[in-house]
Image (cartoon, rainbow, N blue to C red):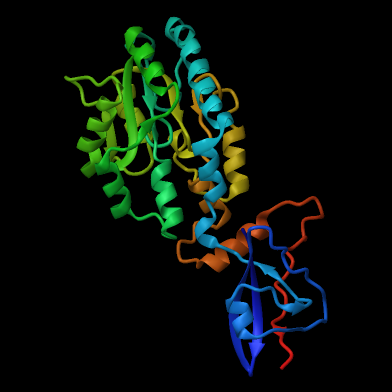
Length: 331
């Protein structure tokens, strides 16, 4: 089904109507400086208007901004293969990391004489170990935005599934006597349900040590994860950090997009060996960076800014085509 938004001036007032082309019907072709004639009964009956339309504007559906990204994550063979490939590659590097006593994935947090410490890996949870794409799908279908309350409700349902290869990687680490820590920005209030979910999916958990470190569990544990990495680094040599967001590796990442890219490029020696990154096109601070982290923006402004940020090869000043003027209808 192809949807078009046509703005009409009827009797001096502005009416916004939707023209739907479906089941073999042909979309009306746009022309400039033309008018159309039709009755409201014809329109409501779904019959295409007679004549030629002066302007047709594709409907901007801001609520479905993540539709393609979420659908790709849920249905594409490529995404599942990429995630499995990433964990498989990380698993094959574990022995090298274990045998090289100088190896650490936390060069800033690791203290002196870390070489003698027992090994550990740090894993993010959401979109790294757990697939929450059904929650994203609900937001899209309900035309809703992320809210802590709705996400907490989703977590309590414990319907998230394991990412391909994630449980095997974690179990392989334990088999090599490597401790597994789960560092998540889920709040402390969700720790119990997160623990239950991970256990149900077969992820290893230490019965004696708290290996799930949530945001706010300690007063110093804010959304930045460096303090939690430092906490682990006091007792363990950190071999790898795995996540889906730059913030899983670097604290000061909420900066403009160009700076985020520079931050990532400044750690090229860590990516792919000590720092393992999974793709997440559905959500994250990467989007906030494009929008200058302005949470007060309306959907129309968000779409406008994103369109302006696109590079189309036609020069830095290339702007999206402005919407057409209202369509005047002959009486």
